[in-house]
Image 1: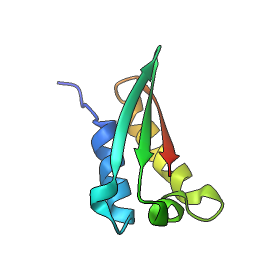
Image 2 (image 1 turned 120 degrees about the horizontal axis):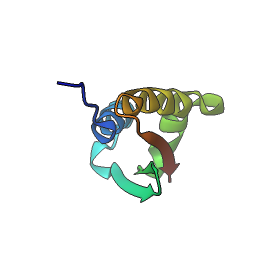
Image 3 (image 1 turned 60 degrees about the vertical axis):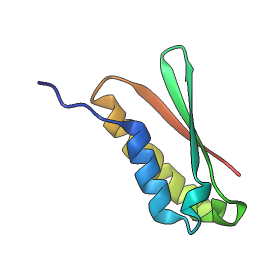
Length: 82
């Protein structure tokens, strides 16, 4: 049995751990060709918490999600929408 990752669940866990308004978190999955993009919408007051100073938090989230998705050979990206 090969290990399987759920990138969407990981994105949801990481983002909801950071924001104050958990109910406002919406994750949309966009598939184009061989890659998948998760578009994360959060409350405008929480956007800075998800992005972080100089984008450090979102870069870390992208790195973790890409690593988890690479187990299955998938190409994944995460975008933050206001």
